[in-house]
Amino acid sequence: MGRRAIAVLLAGLIAVLGAAAVLIYARGADARAVAGADPRTVYVSEKPVSAGTSLADAVRDRALVKTQVAARAFPVGALAEVTPTNEALVAITDIGVGEYVLASRFGTTPTGRRAIQVPPGQVAVSVRLEDPARVGSFVTPGSRIVIFDTFEMPAPTSSPTPTAGNPTQIQATRVLLGDALVIAMGDTSLTPADTNTQNGAQDQTKPTFLVTLALTPLDANRLVHGIQTGALYAGLRGADTTIDPTVQITDYNVFEVAP
Image (cartoon, rainbow, N blue to C red):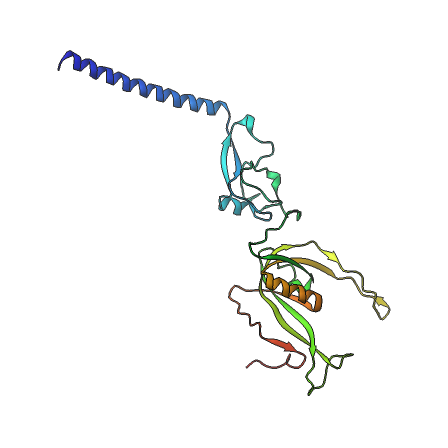
């Protein structure tokens, strides 16, 4: 091998070793810089988080992800870890994309001040129900419910009329909405006191709750009509429940046995 070839080979080897040394030094410098910055873990939002979403679900859905920032850039009060102690907490307000998430954004209950999220093409309509009429405390945002409507209708001319005080009307109940999505629940309020008395005692006021549903425009019309003209009652819908909207129960067939 000639001297020129050996010189070229040595020059190439030296260049490779030099590049490797520079790379090793650069990596070491980066590591020293990170270590010197005292990096700390913080959660940031990569997707919108709706009020009421649990911390565990937000992390599981990768709406919140971990990243590291230098200690001097660490936001005061930032959410730094998710543990069995705090994972059941829920977002008390909506959280947008790209935020350093503060631990104070999660609590036991949403504030109720956020704008509700109405699905595209649907209408949000609220209906006030007494406590028994809303299936106790089991209806929550995300529940799917059935709305029943009890109303007056003309009594059959060939039958005695059971409605006291109105000989031409009877009571009937039908399914008004077979599958309605609950998107919000209002705070407890009280109806005005009933001034009618019985045995000298005034009736107690009844607690009522505002249930907001996401409905198609047609179903929204039905619900508004039912609110104005009938008495509404809610039922919690099971996953595989089949609802027959044609069934009508009246004062005359309420005790009939189904075939």
